[in-house]
Length: 191
Image 1 (cartoon, rainbow, N blue to C red):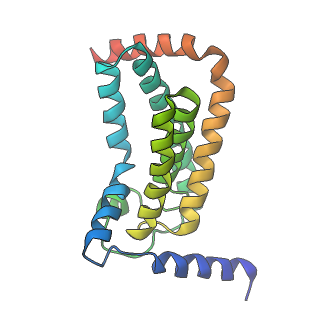
Image 2: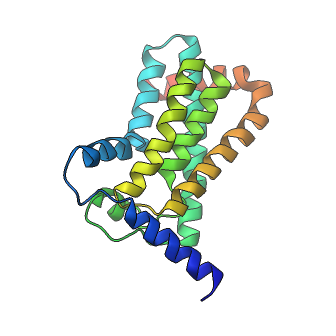
């Protein structure tokens, strides 16, 4: 048996071993909560609310996060539709299965880790700590609910971390200038 085939079998078997999607109870409910907490619409809406209600610091934070979440989404979808790995079989998560039948890499894991890395760079520290606890829970929950394999979320985490770090390197020198422009442009678009 080839090495890659054996690794894919281990990935599949390990992923199915973590599943709780078909097991009613508290663990399933917690996994479902975390699996949904990484949804892009949730974070998009959250960043809009933070922008609308926050101070200049939080407006800049929200615009910066939303900008890189958007860049990441394009990259992840390009990878998914290039690689075309089918999601694991299952009933839960019909919205994900119908709108995006591909699983590699996990967009939720990528987004969660990107958000955590950028929060570490932007601050505040307490939020970064919370998000670094949350990101692996989102990733694990995506496997537990049967919409991803373990390798999907590992790859997603790596992609999210790399995009965040590369994005920071590219934009940190002009962070506040870009943010002021984005806040102004964003305000014009919304109002």
